[in-house]
Image (cartoon, helix red, strand yellow):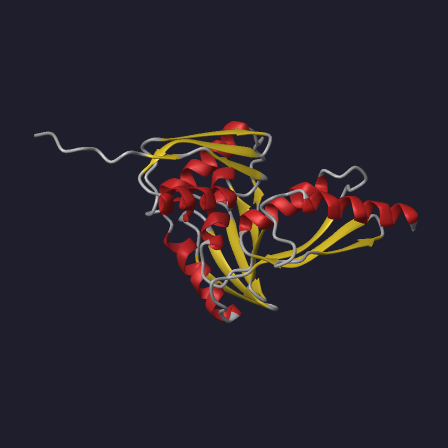
Length: 247
């Protein structure tokens, strides 16, 4: 018991040292279950969720985490509405057209779109209490990451559990991660990537370059946090000075 109490105390201290976590306003409940650390709470954004998980996972003795941290959505929507919206957005994405798309409600599975004849793979979507779970198999890590980002962008989503497999198996690396973040930023109409550089190392993504406004800078960071496998985002983007007219 002393060891468990010490571990929980160490995790609390680690969370308290993260300046982007407001634990008074958004408390995180911790518990120990068998050999796993449990974490539960409602957090303001994806960044807070991933930072909390990263800080806890770095504590010696924490090997596995039961993740029940959820993001507070801008507005609450019924699960049916969220499911419909996620499937509609995935169906409209050209890069995901080769894959069958299915919506699951309990034991009922509805085919949203059949796969093209020359492709293999499928995406299955289910929603429970605002938590979107993506299952199935796709043919590349880029597809897996893109589907996850599109799901995070849907109103009413509290969490995205991206359980899709990649077949044939593909080795993940820093380049793949950077490519996934760039694709997410390119899909966002609020972000111009012309002057943005993206690098990745061991789950830490760094954004450098220039954007046109603070809103665009924040949107680029939000998009990066939504990418599967990203543990931390270093936002070094600057606001470009407006160009002066030449007379």
